[in-house]
Image 1 (cartoon, one colour):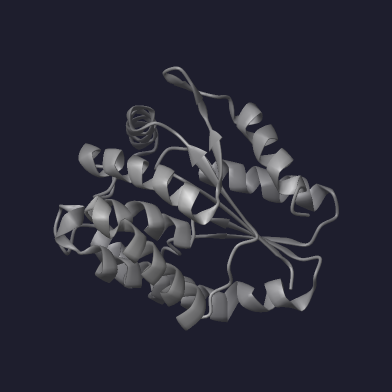
Image 2: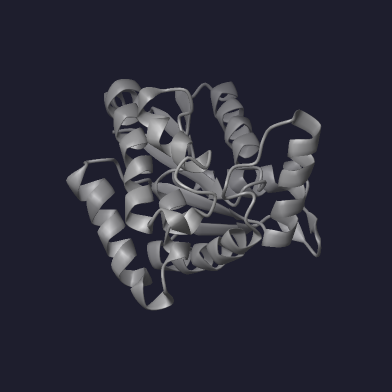
Amino acid sequence: MGRFIVLDGLDGSGKGTQAERLRDRLAAEGRQVKLISFPNYGTPGAAAVEAYLGGALGSDPAATNAYAASTFYAVDRYLSFRTDWGQFLAADDGNIVIANRYTSANAVHQLSKLPRAEWDGFLAWLGEFEFDRLGLPRPDLTIYLEMTPAISMRLVSRRSAETGQQKDIHELDPHHLEASYAAALYASDAWGWVRLPCYAGDEPKSIETIGEDVWREVLKVL
């Protein structure tokens, strides 16, 4: 079995950029590496996720309960694992899979919908459901790129203005992002993620600085 590395974070935290940089750096060193990203937009497995994020089930994220929404994302991951990257991960001990978001995203965006008293129960259910029942692989390393909600919202708005990309229902809801930030801090401690602060004061750190922080953590598991 190869090594499985996950990057996660709030919207606008730069996880996609850092996942690509990490892939390129590992490949330049001669490593066999595959980059995956969730949701896997445009595929059958992501249909329910796209309906949810697009507002078909309501513009309020809380209109779809944490357990229901979590199953949408889990199905997307399961189909992707079985049809795309699972064999690559299992084929060689030297292979590396990098995921931009994973089960950790449910442990942030769906956990945040629940009362604090239910968080431990949800995390226990989520781990059993995705890893034990569905058989999805547990990451060797999960890096959470910590960005404050205020900076995250600012970066998402800038990206939307520059690219024309529409915001999804998570990105449109400041309360959801704030609640998800609190959930992320809790989940990262509960599940042993490496949490990397990606901001200094009211501004994000440079892409290069964050990339070096990510690289140092990755080297520990290779």
